[in-house]
Length: 332
Picture (cartoon, one colour):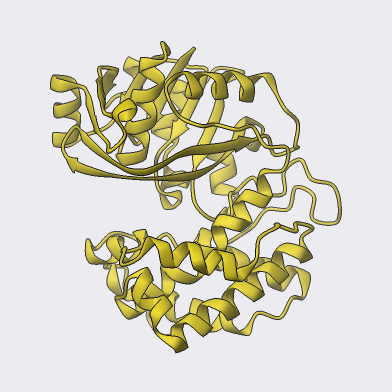
């Protein structure tokens, strides 16, 4: 099995290292000091779990032409980069190459393989003008929901904090050979990788936290624990979660999780900065389209009232426009 990891950051390098020690032929795409460290010393994984404290030496490059076609492309990029990642991904593809996108939020393939009035509907906020679908054809997509926390401690060094589960699934709900093959390799590398019949339930369950805590944390410069302990922001989170579940139901998905359970999980995380707040502090683009704008768009398509989501989206969209150098459009 030949795998290319496009975006070998904290999650991508962790997955690549696990697959490599399972015996897969792995190629990491990275750049800068991180690439130099990967070439010199491999991926050094540091974990509180002895079975996940190891070093692996997969190939590493900044040129996909060095790799050639592979069986699987694992995308470790932010969703904001998908439309422009063609030069990195296209040299890696053959007729049957699968693309596994480890992203938060609503994926560009969401309605692919579904029946009903929204079958194969393109979501404009996450696939503007079809740019993502053109770069990453939906037939290649395998969904992936990540329940793992890692960080780059230093170039070439990945700190594993918690979790080992990467749930995957086909958009049409089938249990395919390609999913089973990838799952087996991940498990052989020490990770959990269940193949789900309905990955969309996992998508919405994880999104309940991301859609609320991520934008609020950036707007308030607050940790998850601080948001939970403040009565008004806690109530705001609850309202956003209720509206999100209503949108999920409107598009035919009914995840079996309560808001109270989701809040309790966030409280256990404690004073952790969300990825959106970390990106804000580093001046990086905020990955809010797939987390928030997409759900607001789905609410509009289904006639679902989401006043709280719309209000937070307006504020978060303004923050995104003014904090990353993009600026506001000129007045007419």
